[in-house]
Length: 286
Image (tube, rainbow, N blue to C red):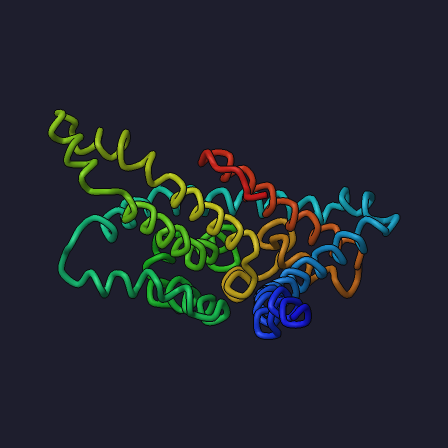
């Protein structure tokens, strides 16, 4: 009798299996998700940490920052990427708005043309720009008559960056505009707002995160551009040699300068990302 009561009071083997098996399954499932994620994050972080550690560990890091080649490359990169960003915003914002909020003939073709530079190899983009604006290019003769020479100049750097970076801004801004409820525009129009007032005070503030994200992508892509710039503008110190090109030029002859430029470029990219998050009223996730 007592043995029977004891067996009834103890949990069955199946019940124990269910109790102990559920946490085990959850733990295994969690590991299946977190382990690959942790490996990918480690793969991303490790090279960046190694770069910063190797640069800061070198006693030549600070002196390298004052080298003429480094200062020239930094100055040129800042000027050209700023020009690229301003042009992208000026001409890309209206295009993004049209693609997001309007329907017009051959819209699919316009969208295709905007996306095409995103998949074209940078070297191919550089050759294409050279064939369009070079001395023997499609517009070369007309430009020569006007006394304009674009290849292997600072202007060529901006055009190469613009070709590859502006589509990133347009795509992100398009997503930002498309996310705004059209009913808000209609309500503003009913209240008597003009189309320009509706755009400036209603649509633009709500789409700002998308525009800010596009500005970051555009800025960082322009600053890191290499292949198209090399093909179309060359690598001339003080004129076309941006930080990316200067890193390649200095890597075999002056490793400390190459590391200094690489760390600076990484820092500029990080600062731009934080700045745009702040301007957009968003703080990076913690």
